[in-house]
Image (cartoon, rainbow over all chains, first blue to last red; front, side):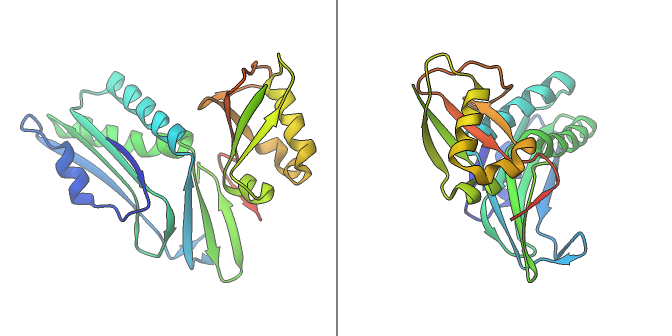
Length: 136
Length: 84
């Protein structure tokens, strides 16, 4: 349940796609474009992905999670292209029978996403633009 | 042999395109490909130390051998920003 898309993301859509009758918990993380970054006003962001590798790395993260926690489903949707302030850049949702594995796996997923998934963002501000790496 | 090279973010902007083909001798490695890329696109040398390479979507060290038709991704910094 991985997607890299130029279209706006739907948090509810992602959450409902992974909810099962056997699940007592769905944890979600929503990444949003912030107005200021490292002291600079942001005009907009441009996200770029290496889509095939990004999806493969998202699958790797799911594998790591399933070794550590009992979860039902996981979905990661990332948007690419130009995003304005307040727009949703990433949605991660994890369903599980109980809240603890759902919450912990969701936290793990966003941390690993930033470490190993090849997605970059360019911060465009009135005084120039900067590429920011996967880990930022 | 022919290697398909995909470039992203700052590396893509420096080269001016997202995909280029590089011809290499049989038996070449990721290190040989890097030399080929940097001589064709000297602008990339400034960020050479921070680039990593993925062969068929898996990160690969310099010594990894390449095969005809491999896809190599040029992956800019994992953290921090690059001024472009």
